[in-house]
Image 1 (cartoon, one colour):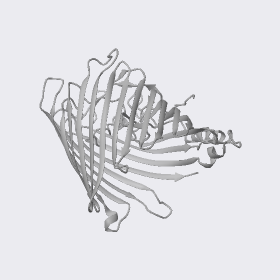
Image 2: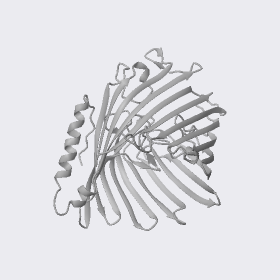
Image 3: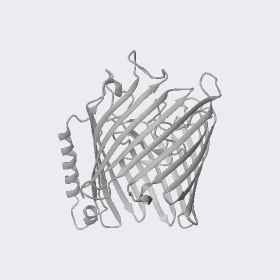
Image 4: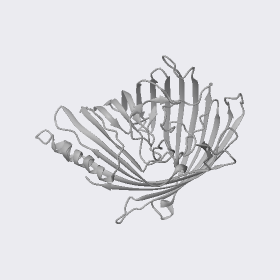
Length: 426
């Protein structure tokens, strides 16, 4: 499958993507292609994103000889997600298309660290950018093969969708659920487009190019799907290899629902070791208790070894239990704990309104200059509302407010305002 990843210069260039989609849906029309069209789903997501980060205590970065002070930007994005069904027959085939386009509404040199848009050589943010990702898929029984480019989210490799447009990966993945409760995964990714990039680039770690990213894993759910055990292994060739063992459990106890998410991650250098000797282990656990409108969570995360948590550049740190909006608490040897509270206002008569507050503290950080007692803490809040009915049904508004303080890096105060409006086309 030949993929497209291009920078676009006009909103009118969305039209060819829509036309190509229409053509692709029309081509396979035959007696065997009924499911291809009948089971197709097409949506257009409208995402308006405002980002403001203030650097405090003189920790702001210097860009082209000038202190940045703050990073600020505002974008409007369009995310076309078209997924066909499968043709009839023993082997069904289909096609998935992502059309991604973002326009800068505001943001000059101060947008350099927002990661909302690509940054030109003169330090200015691009006026717009976008790309098209296409993936072919084939299904036999309960096994699916997917080849192309898409928004891949796996415990061992999580595409980031935290800005204007989502990160996408080019590769092939086989997913099989032939045995009840057991899902097996395997595949390889060759390229990626990061969330603020229109091009397809090699996968990197700390800006060092690796080769292919090979992965395999399995998840087994049992106990009425209340318990899950996951085992994963991945290699970014000639850079690092990583194994991940996960156990999750949910248990109703009277009016409460108790939850646990336990994990162990072991990573080290691989092959030619282009990034040098790597050594990282993560021990982590998150425990939650939900009753009525309230969910209380505590989490602990401990890194061992001389290296921070290993992940492909640009990907999300969501595998870590203390990952947040602004920080993952994943420095070498870092130990961190979290307390969190979620409240759903549906229980007091306001469905669609939620509030989250969390505090994370990290210490014992090892730094490049030999320190072994670095510290940091962060506070994050999110107030979100989704309209429940009427013309603007499903329009969501999120306000994210964060603070980070460190003695080993940048101090931040951050606000984000995000509007999402999903339109169902088919």
